Length: 218
Image (cartoon, rainbow, N blue to C red; front, top):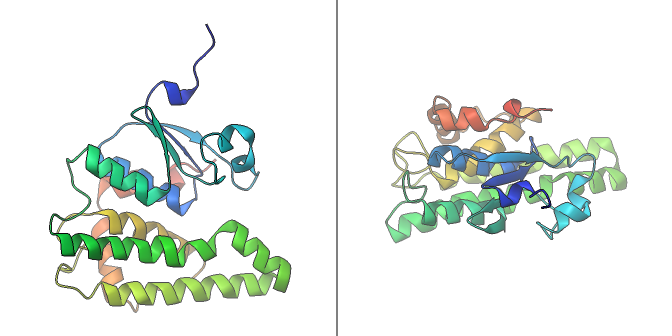
């Protein structure tokens, strides 16, 4: 009998240690208390373009999560699936208006800041305009994006800690990895009090510590 791949044996996350999108899903899995196996996909080495990975994620991206007999892609879609199928420790508020705003916060990071900071985009900027342009592009993008998120956090559900209410949710899963990237690129957010408060609230939560890239560095 042929050996089964890891996806056939249970919950498997295919990710890259420093990928923001992967980091989001690791946080959500930890908040939900879901155990999983992990398969590293080295983006720098181009493993995301391998035939084996493309069979699981046709975009050639990470993460890909094998769960419940499915292989799921796109980090926010994965997180919402986890929330719908494993309702303990909810990651979205129950009120429809609040849910919409929390989704908007997560999307402001995942769809506005993150895509133009991706490795492929930065490589293209460098190829067109040089290494200094790459750095300026990314730091300007992160700084502007975080200022927008700071303004969006001025809402009735922000009580001075997490992005909404008194427990972490999908917006925190998106924001904390982006703050890790800001730190890597030397982008300060000390002048953004709401974002600073979210970072402070998440810091002692075990799920965020467990999902940190340093735990998975090769």
